Image (tube, rainbow, N blue to C red; front, top):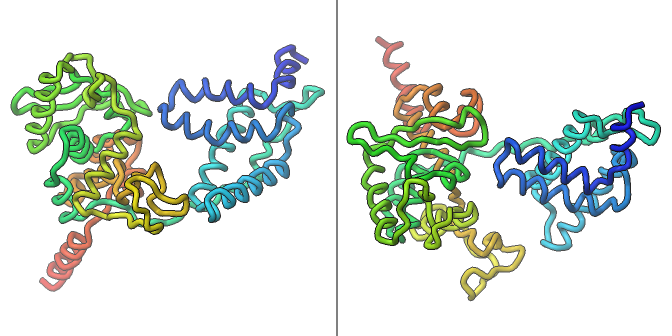
Length: 344
């Protein structure tokens, strides 16, 4: 029996979670790592002093049931299926890591079966792809806003990049040579995410206006963040999220109604649909803009494999299932074209 296997049996759950954090950080975005830790740290606290091999599938199931009850006590409702799914997914990923690196062993050095194999992952809810219809798209882009609000909305809408990619952009990643304007994505969550994106003509003047704004505020430098705050730091993902929500509300696009009749701006009850940071003003998110980018290209006949490359996907399957929605008008047009050809 090797010393490594004896040692791993003595490591508590909290320490293993720290190791998993380092493992994730090597190839996952900061946001993804924090989401996993938000699930795993409470899990570790629920089993103080216990070794990982002592936690059974029944223990994990009981923990999830108690977590759901605590959620209901705090928020006045049962957690949504997607929230439960996120809990189970994080635990499954953690135990897959433990299994892969031989941490699942008992006091005698024998391999213990992964208990998460017995815990079912809730089915993913089938929801329509949330993308902006042409009128909503036009209203959002035409909406007045601050320089920061406008560049965030226009950049995400016309490039389809992820928030993590947007905040890692440097000013030097933009090539504005006339006729060859392009954007270099040098940091992404996957190898296929490292790519070059042509800049749409309508986006070019917005980028130039933003760069002028950065110059006026002495924030311009090739290595400086493109989405810069007044302090010269990169905008945080939550800040980008709030800017998009504010603009969408102002544009009257997919507004989330207040259900608690709050009279104070940004302050809502925990059961109110606007309760998330007091800023959940619209159903529109940064990812809605990414989907709108993809669906707009799809409905204008750009091949799916090209759209997939622009989005930084490793395969067209993800693009087709979660991003590229065919507009009803486009579907009807293609349907009638088939009928006309058949009649001819």
